[in-house]
Length: 404
Ligand SMILES: [Fe+2]
Image 1 (cartoon, rainbow, N blue to C red):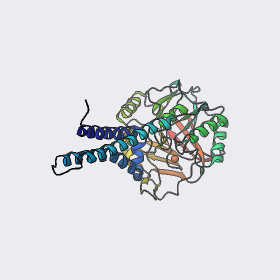
Image 2: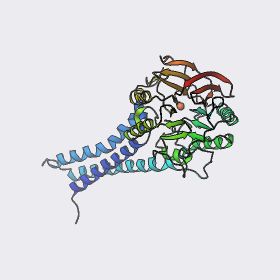
Image 3: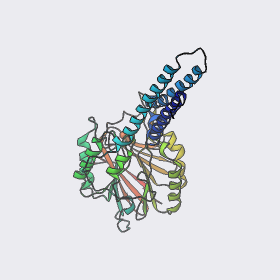
Image 4: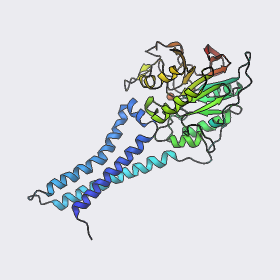
């Protein structure tokens, strides 16, 4: 039986709307998309275009229905063909975009370089407890932005060499390992360099907002959370790592609180509840909580004292007495203290330095602008000794954080 034209017009319009909705859903579910739209409103244009891909065919089908009911309107067949043609064209665009965004950013060229990556589920073997020698020595840095020509390749290589020579138990890379996860070059170059220069210290990368661009968290996982690795949360983006009496909680905060969903909040509260107060608790995330910074000259967005993470996450850190939170995102080195929690920003691994801050956080105790380097943390039973180091390993600044 041959279907009527009005029926076909409706089916075509419905298909176009459904495919646009599918594309929108796919994009919005990708880690980092919501934050990108919040912090760079210019990208909302893409969302408006997708909405139009679904709404215009629907609107034309409604117009067709109205005109069809007008006895004097003679060009019914032409109007129906026009409506179906637009629906088919828009549906094809949505489908092609959906397939592209689902497949292309997650492809990985083989063989993948294989640096020594720390498996969260295996933890870190701590040394014997002593007042004289640290039972755990960790290094942290962030925001190298491999894949961007302006990034300082020499600085990041020096930092990797310094970390490798430093005898650390692990090196945490706090995100923005690449300028963009899609295309692939940034991840590939980063993984090759990590394999080449970090021969003795295992690395644990975490996802940054640039790494997630665009829908590239799947590719990131295949590079930096390889098969065989696992985590207590079941997520490759947030988990707990135990190291004797020190507990490291990695959070998935890319642009801010946008990816801090219900499951992650429940998981974080459960971890904090289960850790004895006398143990050391360190929270790691890409996005910072308190930080000095500046207003973005292009978007006007405030890159300092993050209102979203301070509102959604900091109350948990304070309630459970987290000792230290280390982040990147802003390209500075900074030490801050607020309501019993110490904060470090260490976005200093070669990404283009941020401009000198026009806003100094009231929590800030020390800041260094335009100096590449890394953070060293030495854990003792009662304290964590922090040393900010430059790319060559020379000391820039020291702090002591109580771990009791
Ligand atoms: Fe960055």
